[in-house]
Length: 373
Image (cartoon, rainbow, N blue to C red; front, side, top):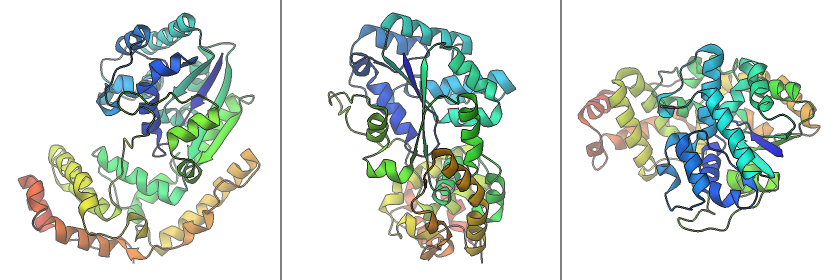
């Protein structure tokens, strides 16, 4: 049996990929590809062989992102980190791995796919996590698949994701960047090195986010690169990729950041939800046109990414990011100007009424300032 492991990264279409695989698990199984469940509901769904018409975002989290749940549980076993509330009522890690093996024995697949962006943390935390996961399936042929995003764009997307989680963060050029450069979210060596060292015989398919999008998105690209069949669309358009985890417009990131720092967690979450919903309706510059770093931070990004990029090039024996030179280029619209344009619209009709009282009061009193010179 071949095992294809998609190990991330975050914010590269991984949620859409997992949702597609989960929604099409029964159809894939009919073609010899197992996308295994980790709990009873998912196992029952696979065992019944019935294709339902539920939309992917309506699937329970432990079914929609089953292997993230497994990864979080493994990390918890290793260092005590809490499993996110999203993945509650899980079996133990041993029980989840045993259930996957039961499915392998029952269905006898040619290929098994395990996909989770949380796998991206394994090598940086401890390579024993990799050994435990792959060691549960002795004799299997392992292949690795990973997607990386050009780091300046990636960090903005990840920064917004942390705001979605309700975290209180510093501005990108005002301290957050100093934190990120020490992590897998900037130093891609920390993400990949443990995997390739632990599994030296496993081939690695390394794609960039730009390549993935040019190929039609994370689903089409992964299935094509892995050589897997795509089930014919049925029910609720299973053949189409759905964007599951859309990012916040860049003109709204600073507003959400200050909201997280000021409002109660519930009020901040409510405001973020509204910002995400109405962002596309606002009269704003396009997100890629907005500069969130400033010249000094961009220079630091470029300089500190050189050894990371050199390592990646050596790993795959080819240039990785075709547009790496764009990292040093300032975008046309300063963040402060975009923030002001956004706030002016959020505090007036028709958008002000979309917010709850606490958020309306916060926005009315918000005094913006530049995050860089």
